[in-house]
Image (cartoon, rainbow, N blue to C red; front, side, top):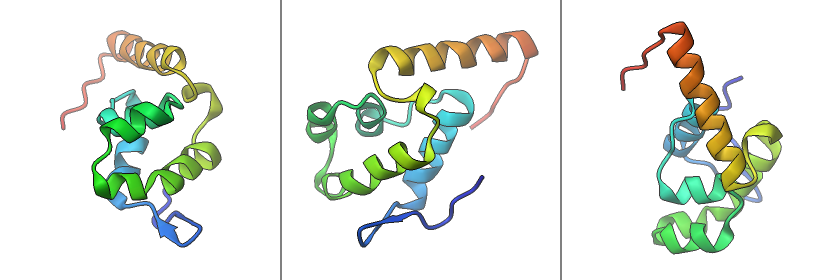
Length: 100
């Protein structure tokens, strides 16, 4: 499902961030430290890694992760690590290669 304009409380999730979150969901790609910490449910880590612009987007990023992403792939470092490992194993078994 592609969401083109995810909004939460008057904020819109930028397409670039949405695309990074979708890439994580699809193939386990880590979307940068700010979004990684958001996926891990680490508020202090997210705030620490965020630039000024990203800090303002924390509510919409959190809402997107909570409402739109599968619960089994977000929530802690262990869950994120497990999802990434699953995706690496899938690629190894199927021979899929994703070129960025």
